[in-house]
Image (tube, rainbow, N blue to C red):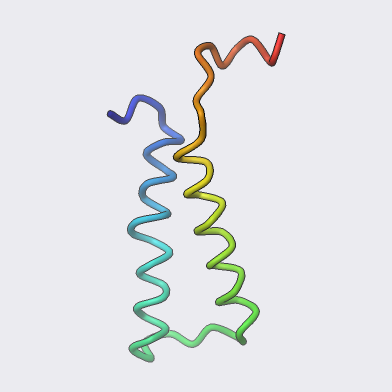
Amino acid sequence: MLKKYRDLLALLLGVVVIPAIWVMQGLGVIELSGVEVLGATIAIETLIAQFYFRKKPTDENTNGQ
């Protein structure tokens, strides 16, 4: 279940926003300025997935101590 704001943000970006950018690019609604931008969105999508499926610490306030 979504307990943290950043989990919700990761899901929204990873499932809605970035795929919507890809769909709009594919349909010709928007034009991304080069292949580099499309590659950057793929990298961002990968980082979001890694963040969401990370091993969550039991207490995030310990700072590794």
